[in-house]
Length: 273
Image 1 (spheres, rainbow, N blue to C red):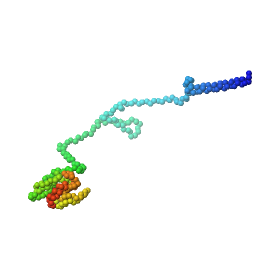
Image 2: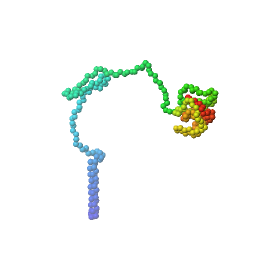
Image 3: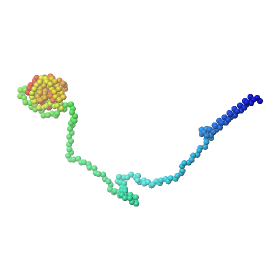
Image 4: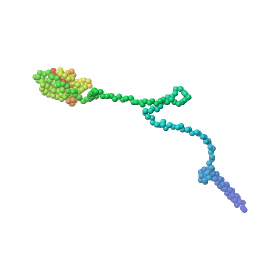
């Protein structure tokens, strides 16, 4: 045999030997893994046997408690007439631990009598009156009073003025004859017009008028009959027939002009409700 052929055969045998060793090693590793891996063991059905752990407990006998006899009668509802017995503890210790039981009371508790008031023979009477508790701007006339007082006049056509606060009107008289009448506005319930019989003591064709909270220049046809109370024309409102003033008698400018020219100083002014 040639030397070259012999060398080739030697290499072939060595290669096959190495391959055989590798194949055996692979199969050996696979077999070891299948034996020790639970996943492969579950597939092949040859799972390793479970390892038995050491027991860490011991059996102990514990006596069960005995239940005392329960008195069912204790659950029975107590009536109001038989109160529960009172147990009074002993002030000093003794050999006998049994509590002392007081005798149940024999008397039945009674309720206090209810006293019902009786009606008297002559019951009282109650009167009710409604009084407004807040001021309003609405005019509430006072109750009708006695007839207006008689006015002293000679009966020969003496001129005098009658102021009716209830009806908010002014009448011009000559004797006992009414020659003219006017719708006016007198004082409100907060600033009422004075009542009584007076005489005109001064006249102004136009003048200023002022007081707390107001100032009125050039008020026309003023005739004062008592202090600052007077009859005059009005240009700041047109609500005649309703009390509007601070106490004076408000007329329209035309009516005040007529009355100013008709009356004179000393003319009687009778003011009433």
